[in-house]
Amino acid sequence: MPRIENAYGFCRQALVERLGEPAPARIQILTGPRQVGKTTLLLELAGRFGDQAVYAAGDDPNAVLPGYWERIWADAEARAQRSTALLLLDEVHRFPDWAAKLKGNWDRIRRKRIPIHLIATGSSALRLATGSRESLAGRFERLTLSHWPAASLAQVFHRSPRVAALALVQFGSYPGAVEFEKNPARWRAYLRDAIIEPAIGRDVLALGAVRRPALLRQIFAVAAGSPAQIVALKKMQGQLQDRGALETVAHYLALLEEAYLITPIEKYTGHAIRRRSSPPKLVMLNNGLLTAMHPDGAPSQTSEPERFGRWVENACLAFAINQGQRVSYWREEPLEVDAVLEGDWGKWAVEVKTGRITGHDLHGLLEFCRRHPAFRPLVVTAPGNEDTAKRLGVDAINWEDFLLSGPPELPIRTPV
Figure 1 (tube, one colour):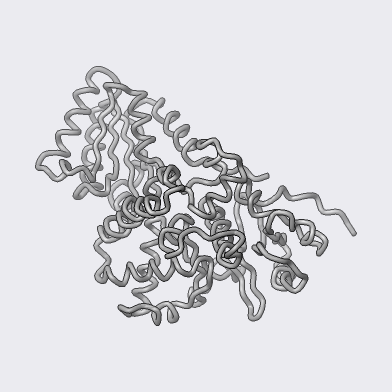
Figure 2 (figure 1 turned 120 degrees about the vertical axis):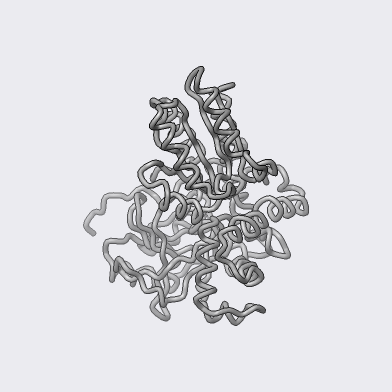
């Protein structure tokens, strides 16, 4: 089985090891979605340093007061006179001119050899990446704390693996929302107030590249209503009340991706450069976003099998993306493959079928693998339907196991 990364544990271990190096070392930039544990991780690390740690948040109201930035650095430097200090800057992209200021301070403490470790976090990948490229080249290392997988939900919240997989499909994997799952109204309010609104209303709009915020919100709503579906930008444009140019729609989708909300995956062509003229397949990176935006909430396995199936497919594709796999889709009318995976899991062509499976359903999958023999076909089924797919000569795994451990270990092929 492929190694499924517990992003929180991986980032914690990596940072602990790097904090053991002589200070000042490189700046550690931790980025990732909202509400996945970045602040919790910073506070945990602060506890290890005790009085030698200084914590400051860019979204704290005090951060806009004159001299705030200078005071936190002076505090850290004063503590560094006793022993190695740790400065933790949460939501660093919220500080004005953060990258240039950080570069200036860091160059100074490096020059004076002041023993301060620095960790900075942010929920806007684009703003962090832009700032770090412009001012911090060669001075930082970047880690990503991604959306939690089902295995982490099972481990941290002491759930059975299969209960955790179902919860991920229906409610997503934001750890702070787990306690509200039995109270739909409270759960929805938490998702919207703590995740969706800050991500769109602060992180994306703070980029300064959004001239039509109403259009941005409409694009997010349309994408949330089309999970794991191929949507032409022209068709999306036609669904919007506030219509914008196709380039603007594509740009806003890219911004939503940088905020860890949506990934518009591209069509697989077999070339390094993929055809951006092909319509994207929209994947919400956490199923909690789907349920929070849907008027009926979480889908039922029994009474809403079609909607539940779409939620499962979205969860499987989002899981692969969050685990660092390259994910695309393939379509040559009338044939289609739900997902093409490339990465340390291997090369897989994946069809997600939560209902009844017939040989006709696999035509696209088998044709793709005939044209691209480096890929192995895989059907992600409903639990109990694996043997049906295997009888048709295709590897199969049920969606619960896929969400817990990824695709099966590649067996050694034997001549027939």
